[in-house]
Length: 307
Image 1 (cartoon, rainbow, N blue to C red):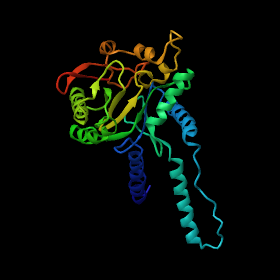
Image 2: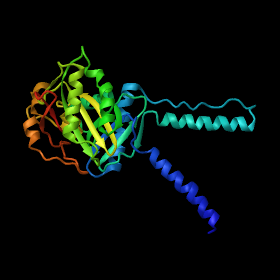
Image 3: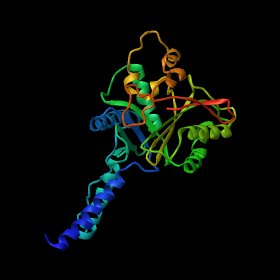
Image 4: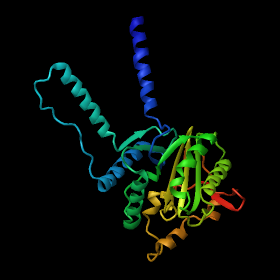
């Protein structure tokens, strides 16, 4: 093999491959759905696409192919080629408009990036349907967490981003009871106690009437850090829908007369969660749970859940 051919392959093949991989990794600015599973990530991804497309079609209607046929026959070859390339690019954008899988950066975690879809609305719709029908529509998916915002996983970047991001739910005159759920994977940039205290402080500044409730909060602030990316969302019915665990929410309750309030009370409470074992590795428990601690935050009277 000639040196010229070797250099050519190294320059174009290797460099292009690295660029493609980088474009398919979880990056700051992404919105989507973070999904956990036990081992079988390929099957998890397949199930996720099937489930998300099923419910997205019901909410937003089927995706439309924007590729139109060329009815002009009098174009010259160059113009026709440019139009064909433009149509292919448009078709690719349409194909990726709703869902595309990217490398999450952690084992047993799949990230589906969304385009033109509200991930919180979509995932809540899925959990609501599974809770009501008790139909199990997945085998390997454990938890399905919407991600409405991402930022760099460094204290100063997180504080700057969250001070604006959280206004939608907590800025006066809005107020709510809340908990903070935190988990870090393959990252040591942010200490969990410091993150919890900082976030609780930001919520308190937005409205002092916002109160922590670890038993049945109105809203749950989800902070999932993977490597150098911080994924954030604010979810409702987090306790009722069993921490957004698809396997648990589809289970029939022990008491058939159990109502929403009783179901919420049956979920893991702060004391039980405090006795669980944190798993910062690649595994995920069957119920998607992790360690929970009560820690002081803000003025020392608040508590937040650490997950």
